[in-house]
Image 1: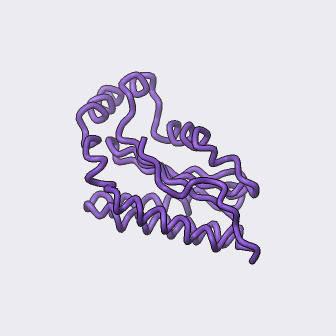
Image 2: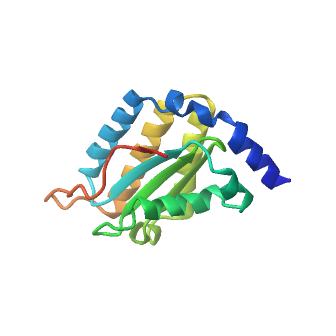
Length: 167
């Protein structure tokens, strides 16, 4: 039954509101926030929003978490000098938020810390505060990365694009 419910959600849910929830000006603000935050630490942050999963993926049982791991690999977030890449993944149709951290951060930050960021973002998103939730999530991730991989004063080369990806 859960599979059928997820299928219906991905086919009929609010996925078509992608551009309304994440308009160009919000994507610009998010890119600036990512760029500015990365200047304070040695990590890299990517933000990806996917409107929905394909019916085949849902029927095969692909979870939002599994899809986030796929996107993490697809965007090369794992391929950073300090193994301090982070992906914030939003599956719009299911209103799911997943954070995937590379091994350098995963060894130092508890899953509960990431879950708290997701919960805060979910709270804002549920109230229609897409800008506030996105920017708060980005700021919270930067704060965690800065705690464990502070900048070295030499600057952090920008290894990954800062602009959020709409899938």
